[in-house]
Image 1 (cartoon, rainbow, N blue to C red):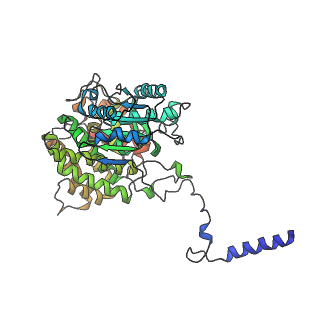
Image 2: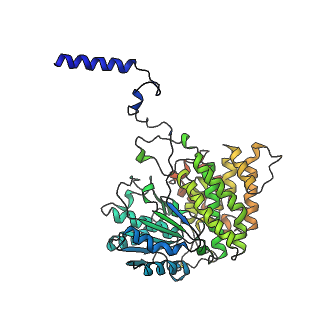
Length: 465
């Protein structure tokens, strides 16, 4: 019997070796493929976004959503300013109407820090919530994502999930509670992404947590919430959309990013530009070109503000999967090292460079630098933003896009470079040092950069006009 089994086994192995290897005729294609070799570039990308619901007044449905989820104890997260404004009132009315039991946390910090994240996490752990609602801009939504994550993983240390090289960057494997995100600004796209950004005070840099697992369950995009946004908040939020679209469209292609993950759970949320994210990035860029100036200049322009609210989500879908690169990587120390700057229209008690402003101030220099790679994409972006490229030379793509951006920013009264918000050439070494840990995004630049390159980019961004 044993000899017979051995002969059968040998015969099967011979048949397998002789079998046609093509998937149409052979059967060997069903075998598990070899694991990708670490160090090689990736060969795949995946799309992950939250469910999205759009419509004027759609916030009133949140109570029903929580009822449908069977939520018994809900955490409503917002900030002190918003807690008195119509968006939060709309959510509270819906929770009351449908008898939802909730606790409110309104201590979210605009431009959150590791400590403000930890405070919210502590509240979430004590509350033992079975669902979360975040009402606000990116600061609120990101804080709520972190609170949900660490409450679901109470034994984890804070740095466990924080991006490398600052944290350990562990994959998220614990199940999280449902999170409904209600954006009140038109910029971060955080309602669609698995990213939560904060200032790490010890190092004076921004970093974050990036995992598909922390993205909201549902994004409620209600354009009524944008009508109360002051001019500068509309502008700075819109600049974030602009850079999300530009950076994700010009990012390193997904199949040039390395290393290839040995397991799909290790494939990063930011994977590089890809055919699906390209569609969303370009569509968002076209909306920005058409509507951002209108949305800033006329708060009664409901069409413009509604479209910018959608553009934020569209760009979020794009960059939430493709990623961003140098504008964002360089923005984190610009925000983290702020000295005394306090922007107009922001009711805060601390110095602050709004995220969208910190990102856009380096954009002319950055895209002049990156256009050496894939210049046709940079030229296409310039055309969408209004440049006449009929006689343009492809080698001038970066300069054309940079000039187009400068004109765009000048028309919208943007501060004249980093010097106008308190920085000087003496700060450049610290700004470069703060950019170096941002490998999660800087490595997605289509053009690699040295410390000398970063210094030159910061210097070129000191003055824009």
